[in-house]
Length: 158
Image 1 (cartoon, rainbow, N blue to C red):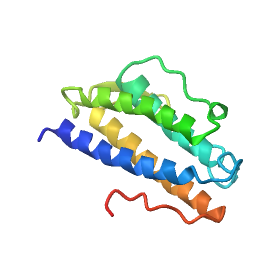
Image 2 (cartoon, rainbow, N blue to C red):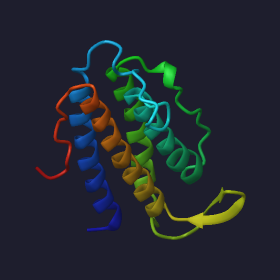
Image 3 (cartoon, one colour):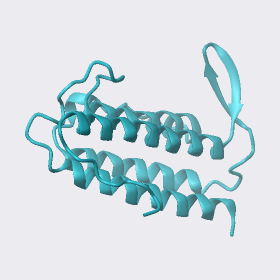
């Protein structure tokens, strides 16, 4: 199996886990999607964290790796889980395009971080964006627990 096939399989598991999360979040009471918890980053709401995750995919996969002109998703544009789900469909398209790249591991993608020029690979970008999603997914589930819900099991292995 080629490396890209492993990544495609892995991203399939990530999408399944994300769908479990989004389905669970559909049960939130009105207003709770946007309810802010200041101790969490990126606006501290479930909605803002979900949009932030998508923005990181847009930045690293869309702009840096694929050289696309993309406007970042704005928090206020997403008022429902269905709208957020649609945002992630566009992320899925970016990942599909990324994983079609022939050389996932060559460190030939330039970017600047803290005013320092660097290079990275498609595989590192894929890994960075997907692990970033899981980090914030944990925060989303914690926020839901703080609201009194019992989080769904979003692990890849059940």
